[in-house]
Length: 149
Image 1 (cartoon, rainbow, N blue to C red):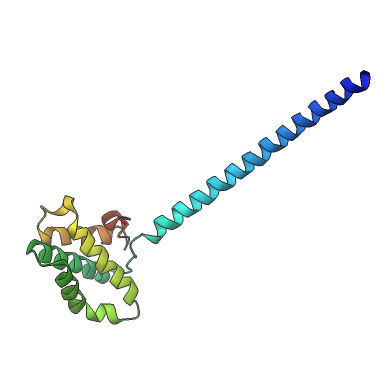
Image 2 (cartoon, rainbow, N blue to C red):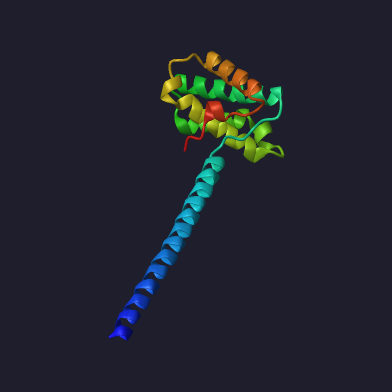
């Protein structure tokens, strides 16, 4: 009978050790999942961030894009036509070495001008606010354009 009791005590001790080991493994796995989720969230946020510009002249060009997009929207120009007009107007910037950056900025400007919260603002005032924010933010357009998807 003593062997039976000792055997069950050993089984109980092994079960406790196994439970403690499983708790550690599950804890590490949960931390790994949380870490991967955080990295994915940051990657998605960065993927939707507006490109940065590097000079006051580039800030002015972005502000001009916002001005044109807002004016076209205010005059109820169809979305397809707006895109074509914007592409024609900024063909030089869109055809340069940073064509993708400027195309992204143009799309961001059009989306920004289409937001409900800026609809009541005059296009020139909106463009001035973008230029000022861009210059004060040293080319960082995220505060204005955000990470809207």
